[in-house]
Length: 416
Image (cartoon, rainbow, N blue to C red; front, side, top):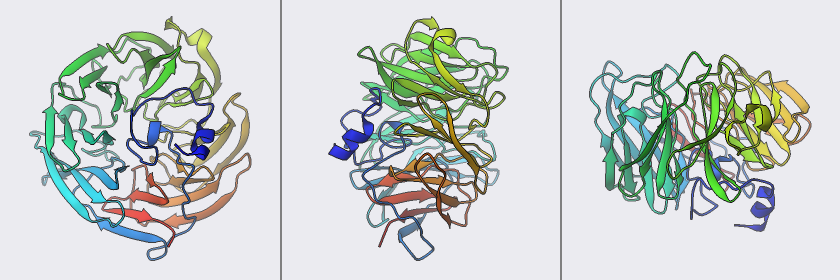
């Protein structure tokens, strides 16, 4: 870890989503530890179809999983569909991060029957995870698989049978020997873990009942350290829970009313966890992880009760928390107190989460417009860059390159 990165991450409570992965990689949804930031990068402010485009590659099939980067390779998951839009094959694609050359394209599953998805979703929306020479590709109810970096399948499993409301969503996290993911279907939602080496089920924990009228959600958990022990922080409909990653035991919960279809991932820093309550009761909560049982009355530090994000995950840089609301309203709060610094609106609607090199923030609209703003307590828009194609995927950062996935194409944006 570089000195700058050590300094940047000071103040974060311990987050251990990936163990033993080089800090220069982007190995899971929103990068190292899910923070969405690589502060040592020098990303371009502006680009066009020809300027600052290192490469662009057409990707066969559909998928809104985000790209991940490890050991000089870029990985994405895709789904090919039949004429009725049902999944025909679920695949993992590996590209050379420097050149964009496709190294391999591996079929992992061939599901049968009708798939379930929303117009803004896909059959390959969960972002893969890379750790210690293994790729974990998660396709929710359709199955989970482990591959090596050459595309050889180590194991596959599809032990969890459930009907998601709008298809795939939650990406996995890794804690010790357990690969953990949310399974928040409309009926009987749960969180589960499988062994990372074998794919065998390690545990399965049903969600406790909440006030939410809709059970389905699509959130990726986070991992924090509380009193020297790792915990899973896992938002779902009506509440956010803390779990023991070894056995799935529920440790604590914070209720947030009727919120459902929760998608933004928890963000951790300054001894707190920042969560969004999704649709129906849009708000951002800063809570102190830990405690026992229902800690709603004792562990909420502050609440921002308007203009919360339904889809994009917030971004924490230093003491500033940046929130991208789905309709294009951008809010900057003091992370310690919830005090408003500024609020502005940018063009477009938003599903992808913002990412940053520590100095600039990149915000990608559903139509592919990437707005670049400067970090800080005042709003400063630097540029707009139009990819001219639909995109819901969160970009990845690889050293000084921004990896952007549109509906048909993968791009590497980098200063030339």
